[in-house]
Length: 167
Image (tube, rainbow, N blue to C red; front, side, top):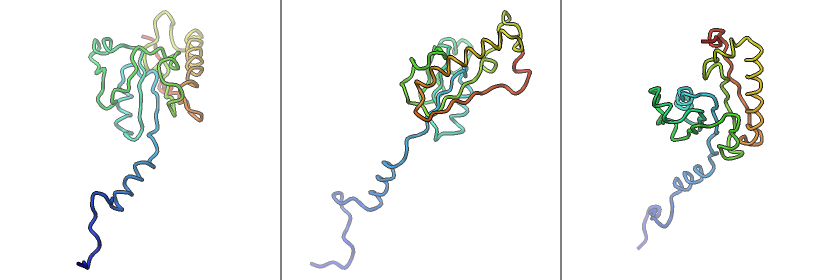
């Protein structure tokens, strides 16, 4: 019995739209991955993850979950999707994360993450400058282990002088 219309799509014959959707899913590139180091309270990491949901941010903090809870800070921000490394030595990020898995590393220098200890004096002192340079040097040495071939390192340095004052 002849019919006058196009053949009906069955479960055995996928539709053209279904094939196009499947091809688009396979062709989409993986999300850009950025490791955030030095954001000890995870507030910046959670905020930037909300602002850029298409990028996959992973936070590395030297604090433990218990330390964060003691300061009434959410140790597992839902927006981060569990991508948080606790008790990570920033000078050894290459040992805490899978090698060559990040596109970029975002480094907050110590003046933003924690206050300058009194024994180091003020941030304009040579000892603080030496400590900061040595810290960055060690992170850069290990950054090459976690970054992909053309990976980038972004340094965040405070622009306002009052952010770099001693307690």
